[in-house]
Image 1 (cartoon, one colour):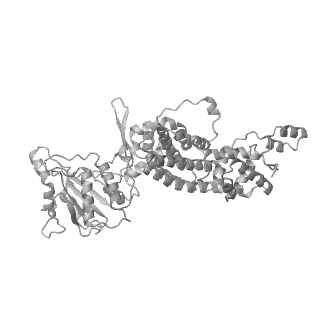
Image 2: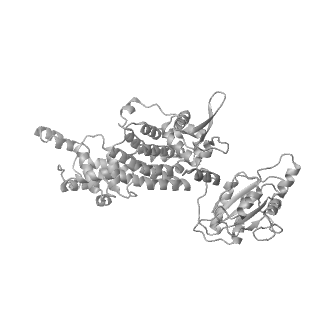
Amino acid sequence: MIAAIKPSGANTRGLLAYLYGPGRHDEHTDPHIVAGFAMLGMPDPGREENATLTQLARYLDEPVRLRNSEFGKKITDHVWHCPVRAAPEDRHLSDAEWGEIAQRIVAAAGIAPEGDDLSCRWIAVRHADDHIHILATTVREDGRRPKLHDSGIRVGDACRQIEKDYDLRRLKKGDRTGTRAPTQAEMHKADRLGWEQTSREWLQDRIRAAIPHARTAEELLAYLEADGIAIKARRGPSGDLLGYAAGRPGDLNKDGEQVFHPGGKIAPDLTLPKLQARLEAGQPEEHPTARRNRPATPWHQATEALDSFRTDLADDPHAQAHITALGELLEATAQKAPTHLRAELQAASKAFARAQRSQVRAEDRAAHAIRHAARDIVHTATGPDGSALAALIAALLWAGIIANRWHEAKGHAHQADAARQALHHLQAAADHALTPTLLVLEQRQPKEESRRILAHDVRAAIPVQADRILTDPSWPALAALLADAEARGHQPHQLLKEAAAQRELATARQPARVLITRLQHTSRNPSSNLRAEAARLRTTTSVTVQQATATQPPAAPGGRPNRTRR
């Protein structure tokens, strides 16, 4: 059940005309009052032939008129409006049930607390099976104004209890981190102008897409302006940036002036202070040795930055910072990915935006490596090779799984749901990204004897998941990759152990595919493998062969097969 409190209005008669009217598309049927502050003596134009909307408006406005006549400053924002809608799959509630629900909602909001005989005047009008409209005038019988601060939160809590009591669809409890739903006026304007999104939704997407491109809030606003977005910056006497508002091109008011939306009204995490905390968090000085050992491309750097994602989620502020930065990296990857993967990655990024913010205050400095990787990706001039991109998307998928688990453990229902939606798109992108690699590997899979030896490596390195790996349709491709890695100087057994340690395989849909993406990342640089080195030198001198094989580690227990070349 959703109760959406609308901005205050000043025209009681005008709202009543809509509630009792035919609707915009003749969808209103049999409008009538199902509950009110004092049903006795209150006119109902839907049930009484001689009752009029003007009479009902005057009846509701009486405390407002009396107060305005006694005080010099008139009240003009006195109309409180709250539509209450059941879910499409809910049963049809009776008038009596809707009346009880309306009374509970006005009590929770502070319009008419239980037992308060001097509360505001209100009515609940039903003109459809699935919803009612509550209208109240916000001046009490004693002339005071009701206390409506945080009424939306209290009404939301009341709706969650109503869902339980009336056996209705159960929605998730709000946590004050969601974006404001578009108003009817915004939706009608977008429809009139032929826009698929309202201005605030459009601006939110553009600002999030710009974040990986900037290192400061000033850079971000400059980037947005260069992209054609109208920016109104608020500055102090010293010139320091104090706030901002953004406007969509073509979004004009009735006077032909640009409409601007403050950052905090676009999304809770897009206020200037929160953007500054994310963008301008200090980064530790990088040691020269670390720079020399850094992976060659931004795509590999990003995958490596995600390697520590699991351990960094142990501390709540660090966890929230890493999840926020993960969203930026996902957005950057979507912008630079090949066309055939972009739609799924953009959908994942859009869905994950809700998972990026919670009530936990993020320690943004903790996630500098992931954020740095995102900036490097959007500024790189060259695209990724197929294996690097597949490895990064697989790493993003695994990081998304961890983020979802963290949110679930913390009881962040909305964020966990958003992460699950993002995972659906990430899984599709991961499958598409890996397909070309699988086709190439399967075409040059090793001979039966080599596959038998590599299967022994799998059983020795990952005994618990070995059967699932070896029966995975992608096992021949994994065997080819392991053989290639061994030829380059790696030990397949060790590679498999390292890859399995980086993420658990029990929940993996196709464990062989997971290992392929991990091995493609970890086997970029050859490591010492004396067995493979000896095989390559076998055509030289027998002395070299003896020296190379003399230092081999002992065979695994149980009579491990001798390795043969492909």
